[in-house]
Length: 289
Image 1 (cartoon, rainbow, N blue to C red):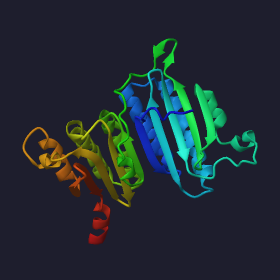
Image 2 (tube, rainbow, N blue to C red):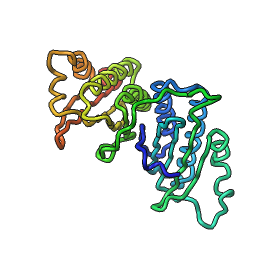
Image 3 (cartoon, rainbow, N blue to C red):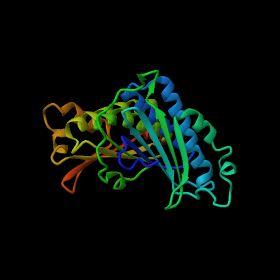
Image 4 (cartoon, helix red, strand yellow):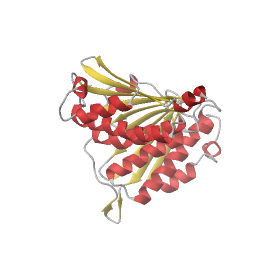
């Protein structure tokens, strides 16, 4: 099924590790929050998309990790999700039914309005799923603003999760959920974990006023007790406002006071915001004993 004429509201670029399902389900839950999604539709989305992603984790790279992309399209009467990998694809000598047994396709077909499982010409596999947006004539979600064309930023960022969003109003919910999930993976303490809420809320508030356009992207990276976040693009000069008096003062205060590093970098007539959070308290306490 061709969906190239539309631009995704959410695009996730991930590595196909087993932990990826937590991030994908978190992003879907965030979308549901923004769109006031019907609970039954959300359950179907989470289950079917998780099955498609799990198939990538289990089969695409023969036990190794590799690229996994999840794109979500919001249409007037449906939600479409495409899951892509760059793995071994469907063996041409194997009957389709044999290849698909035990990898969740029956579940996907049962939960979707329509689903297709195809080998990509450039290599890898694509699962396209369409979920009905109406039941008994009743809409199952609130329409958002139209998604803007992709701007290339998703290819200029890196990390455990790279996400492109449009409209920008999606940022708060999705950034918050994914950052908290990765902070938990990085073993942040409860005290530091609460700061993650404040920082992601501050960044979302900044983006609402300072995003350079109708699409925004972010990259998240984690290590043991360390989390790095890069968000772009912002309007030139908007970063300096974070340290000035005015309506964004509280936003800037949260970022400066709670982050270990905050950097605004000009790039091609725009700006990107880089934030680092660490949680070294336990190590410091251990060293002091």
